[in-house]
Image 1 (cartoon, rainbow, N blue to C red):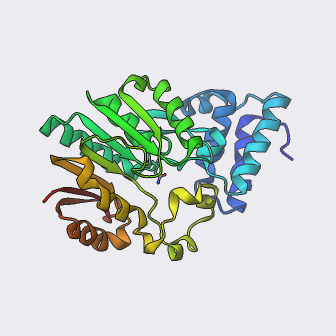
Image 2 (image 1 turned 90 degrees about the horizontal axis):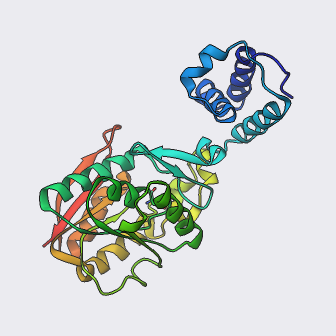
Image 3 (image 1 turned 90 degrees about the vertical axis):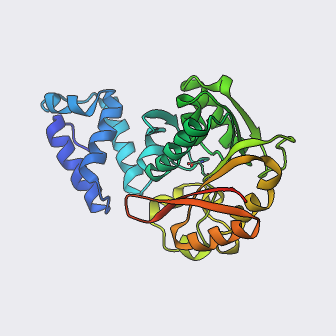
Length: 283
Ligand code: GLN
């Protein structure tokens, strides 16, 4: 049980508690959770070191720390996260947007600017982070699809928070099943791509995320395969496909798309120098 004390001491105790549970960023997490309860920016904490919490705040903080100690990701505890500088609500029905995926969005935004693309499809939209941040930056029309109704509910909410709901059509669809006869300039996807083997080695935090948003059969290729099969039907002649990659199977993914007649334009590496984004065009 946390003892009532000033914020300085409280943070020290909380950091120790989280460290004991092998939380890597214990200090940061203890601070971020406390800030969300106090509804303040982190920079303000420093000036409040000798303040105390109310009983209710203390109880809430205790709960948050317990959840984090159980390795629940910060974003689920807070119910939100940041992506491309925008706010996204998240819960355990959607994958938490990753920093690497921002590389994909930046590439998509560049391509829209260069080629004046208009019609975008975001397959496996999850929280809607890709569709929404592209619609926020660019004058485009986006179709965003996901198999999960719960995910689409979150994504619709996020499109409203970020004031782009008029630019996005959300669809519950098992891959292309409910996408009408329509051609797109860009087909985007960050599909589930973790292999069954890789899943066994993931850190505990990822086990809180929806397994069907992470894992793909056929050694990680299942959804790439679906996209490769269908994209010819849905892509304009001068259109492109932009995909997030499982870096361990990036070569196989490129080969798969080549079989279906697509040509690799480029692969973009992430901060860890791993293959992360693949751009393809019609052959
Ligand atoms: N498109 C979402 C994201 O990039 C969800 C991806 C997924 O569920 N596989 O975060």
